Amino acid sequence: MGYMQFEELMKRGLVPLKGTSYKTDGSLDASLEWMPGMKGMRLKDMPTFCHTADADNALLRIHLQQMRVIAASKAIVINTFHDIEKDVLEALAAFLPPIC
Image (cartoon, rainbow, N blue to C red; front, side, top):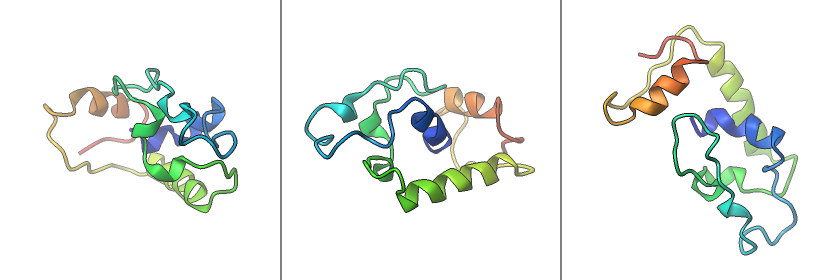
């Protein structure tokens, strides 16, 4: 779910981070309570390659493209247990192809 939200992080102006002091100024403590199925998430809980002040960050662009490809897939296989990640799986099912 975190990866699927990168584009939303950019739309909300949370990524790229502002300035170079984001590691110490509290920017990474921004709440992501709006993220479906993931309570208590903060920006610092997201994969570190989205912790960038560079709007042209290559890893970020690659992952944005990969998430678009995934959303266009015929099915998604997720290696987890439904009971452990029920909230996230149900939230993903709302906008992804069938999850196996």
